[in-house]
Image (tube, rainbow over all chains, first blue to last red; front, side, top):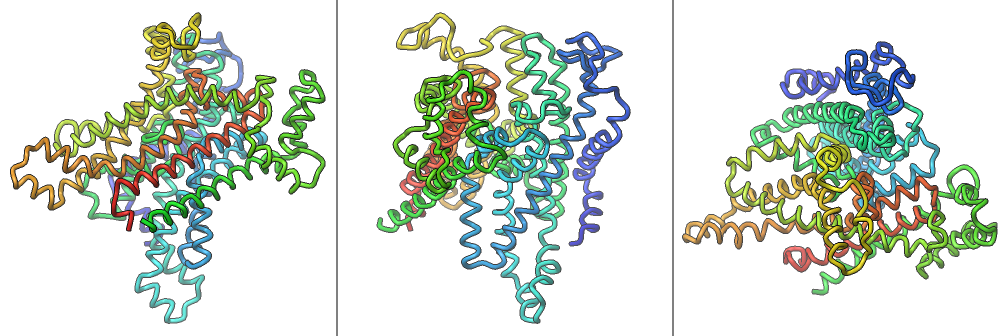
Length: 304
Length: 328
């Protein structure tokens, strides 16, 4: 399957299309939004105002416009989320791919590395790393990649391992194709849908973890992102003063974006495994959530 | 039996390796950062701590002028004797005793939430599979998917806002009421349960779906197997088939999950504790980060990691005992 074909099939799939529209809207907001709203850091109004005509989402504890903050915050949050998702899958594909394709000693060693990173508790490691590094989006990005790549590496290793044993790959080997050509022309195209859904899953994880870290005050608190918006909301005692509008819109944006991405993943799943499409998708997806992107922090079991 | 022991030892070796990686990371992270780690570590406390106290801390962390491998062995030696240094923000309390206090609150809060969530989730999952396509089976999964799209800490904030602030049903922070003293007295015990109720409830709601769906999916598989059909054909009571035949076997994967969750209990539910200002491990970790209390931070990270690794090994042992297939 080539990328253009996959994209065409995704457009034809009802769920993937709906998800891509939601995702596209957020991308659009992140690109042009910052020019359409007022300065999100300007202290323009009376603090702690509830939503009104001038301030659609009210004002923060410092008199900033919450609507502007939500719009402008989309950019960095989305950029860091997607970049992390991409890098996590890239790193996972390289390490998992090498391990799965070469096998033997290399595989033993790399698998050991993958398992060590899998068994380490992610959130505390993230917190400690982020505390030592200078705060900012780049720190968040590298911390998330470092703690998140192992899961994808394991999944992609398993896939490579099974593909490398298939007849068409063996046939290519026998006919004297170079390793590079076998990997790029025979194996990679067959992993495209898996890598796409890994990318989307990793992006969902990255957005959640990023917002969580920034909420804890580990990001650059002078930047406007969804996470820092929530950090300031809790810092300005939004909860004690009853200003629900400072944290409710951001939460809904995160949920909507996550929902959109999940819809795309449903679609990709159905394209890749048509025979599975009849089983309850909600249940399957949730099951994957609970076990797969195992890093959304907090409590074990569900939100691990 | 020999094989099982060999297997367990191999796993133990793996966890030992992982623990060594964590310990070494803990040693390397401060040293890989730009600047003098000791300066960053104690900068805030230059005026508050005597030079001799700082020297003692440097010694504990092995941040001396000695070559790096020598520093590393000093650090390992101190660690092995249970010395993690002194907490800078709770000076002069040693890190180990600060962690011990946090640990007991974390075990109380996250432990009770885990047990309730596990029992409730697995029972609901078994029921949903038993009545496949029924009311429970069709309503719960999409509802849980919707809830799962919201960040956990955001939902916890909302719960605190509505039930703590808005309705005033629950306390807003801390683990026990002011004016009571920790110990075996009724006001303290009742107060501790009251303070844990809301945070525990948010954790249960957030994790219920995972247990429920894992159980449901395994159950569905098992209910389709021949021995269940045979048990039904023999005319056994449906209740007996459900509990003794199906649920008992479907429980295995969830027990693995339970063990892993246990590790996270010792690590404290970071975000829950922070939102509800609950003085467990996670809350301590964030306090340490905010106060730049690096010794405490490092100690917490290490304790949490070791707890998770230990729990994982425990799971290996339990699975081996429960599931004869792994023994081969």
